[in-house]
Length: 235
Image (tube, rainbow, N blue to C red):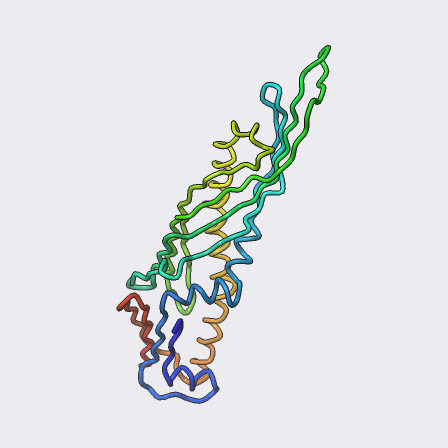
């Protein structure tokens, strides 16, 4: 199971007053699959990232790169793990996969009497793939609110369609631009999901607890068998 809750939490969510015994919430790494696939929250956030266009000329080759976007994101089922902290949790995602598709156009030509004369023009796609990125998410807990710190370490392999083989000199530049975009913006998108989707739900849960008279409590964090256990102990 991805998420296990005890009878006390069920009672609270149903509007009933639970007992004074601790509430226990158990989360396994599969919870990431729920965010990624069933609710599609993470995928939508990551796929909104675009790669800026650029153009230029080298010798007798003019080029334009545009309409770049991330179109694939996947966390392997065995890729997620937890590490406990005194006031939160660290989530490690290994073997994360990304793919970006970028459109490219190349013009071959020469200058005749100082003017550019086009000889050939070709267009195609450029695919950037990453098979083994690392994503680290640190969630610091403060009164039913997570403060996220996210880092991504990725590298990309670049493939050109046949018609764009003349753009091979741009391989390193495209690789750098895609890598920098992913490493900088994916952390922002994941942090936004936590702040805008997860934290409001935690605050609603806190409101239900207070409404039932549980305003004073301790929270314990524990990781066992790669499952996160959050124990809320009413005083």
